Image (cartoon, rainbow, N blue to C red; front, side):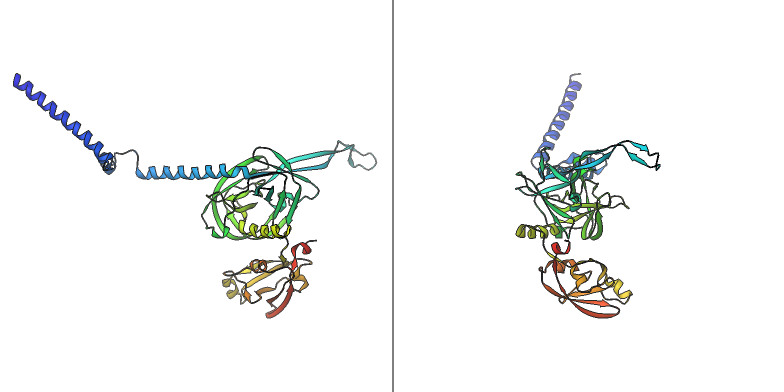
Length: 394
């Protein structure tokens, strides 16, 4: 009996020492050599509940959320709401006119309308704010700017850009400006964030998406159809942008503005557009130098004929004129609808090279340019004197 009991205790001691050495060895491997033998065997034989791919996916989601949260915190103080204040007639009750059978109001009252209509963002600490021109298109109305802390400021001055759907508002307040990015560096698929007053009701609404396309041409306007403008070379995005978001910033993951939200597609879902910030920068450079948005104005609407289309139809590559603006530089030079502009001052216009708008933007007001165009299967040269966009829209 004594011998049996001794063997029993001896075996138990060996088991205890084995467990102890295993635990100590595992700890040393984990802490000193960063080895995880248990995890290795669990993953190898499919016994682990936490897969490395799941961990990586979770980390990516958390990282994306952190980016959005940080950008929003950084940007919110510089994103504003644009509100309109306007007086309009309010008709009273109608009654039947016994003489003519017409219903006419028995009273006419004047009521003050105040509502949020758009968004904007600060570009200068002294109270300069960028928004869309169509947001502040009513020249008979007054406008207010509402900051993220709900403080309100009356708009003292509005500078409207005749050539783009842009406007600058001036308020008497010290505000925090946003950083402007570089829209020429954008790639399709790039992550973007939009902030604005969705539907004219929900202030500081945040949505996310990607850049869906670049270099689009659209017709932008207000939701009531009172304003429409052809815009070239805009950014297409699937970020949710609603009426009321117009004029707000489209941001990259660094919190820099890369576009001004301007329009949504009525025909499609998840399609919205923004004016590239580099276009805005050009306008701002002119504005800060002159106090106005004066720049050369050619006065046409056009569509670029791609090389493939030109070859198939035996036409030259260039800018096909679809509309000539009355009183503009092009009309005064006898440029007509249906003309194809091939070259400006020996610089070719093409789908792979410079656009007409890009070439004109490098010129000065009052400068004379030479245009080579195609009309009735003949090449014709025209001399055009570039007007100011201010002159052309008066």
